[in-house]
Length: 335
Picture (cartoon, rainbow, N blue to C red):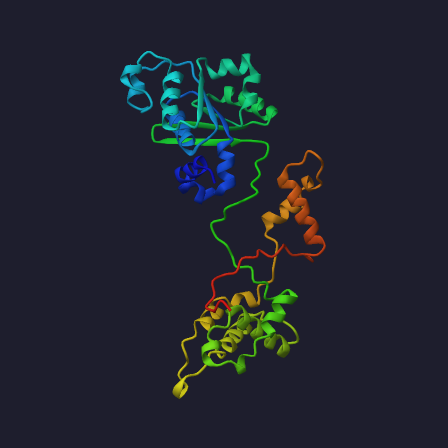
């Protein structure tokens, strides 16, 4: 890693933790246009500049007035009467020297009408405090060029933001929650063989308490199926009975006192995996059924991967998504 890369990594460390390296790369490649540089627009653009976008252009015909001094911290008393776009641009550039900034001293409405090609060079247009007729014309223009549009308007402490784009795909999502994918109901051969390799009765107490809880669940499920015609626990009563059998796997100490085995506790908490069939979430199924999975040379990477996933599910996946692959924390050894 070069010195500049290391410096950038330290500067943006907190946000990289949120959206990852690819998200930061996309941000650093973004070219943004801000239409009108009042307090709403200036604050919005400030956050993007601090985040490290590639460049920005401010389009605004207004000059700094006395009222701007009370609500826009990117203008100063010394800038009264100067072009607001120029003042805001200069101060924003000081906040992050790696971001290129420019300005156009004209009204956004006039620019969109007289020079539509101006918007070709941007990835995102942020339109602030514009009236609906002009926004509709701007949206049609941005849609025709494949440029994403954010319409933002504020009224004192209230406001709204509307996003307009033909499509926005996310490949590396950052979900808030993650469900462990153990596939115990339909274990793959290697997992089934691994679980069967444990002779629980032959283990001493020290080794028994370090058997991964997934193994305990699989062995308990296999015994249950052997006694119930191959079926997993289904009803509430059956699930309660299964958990009772699972709890009985806990070793007994002197005088029949149950031993403290964390792996058994973990197995009881994760018992639902023994009857939860792998399924495809409805939002994923909608993507797989979308006509855009019929890909061609111009297809976006997202749809190419969706097409590959669709083919996997239909063939070797046997109706299931690929295994997520991560291993949850378990009370066990590293052996």
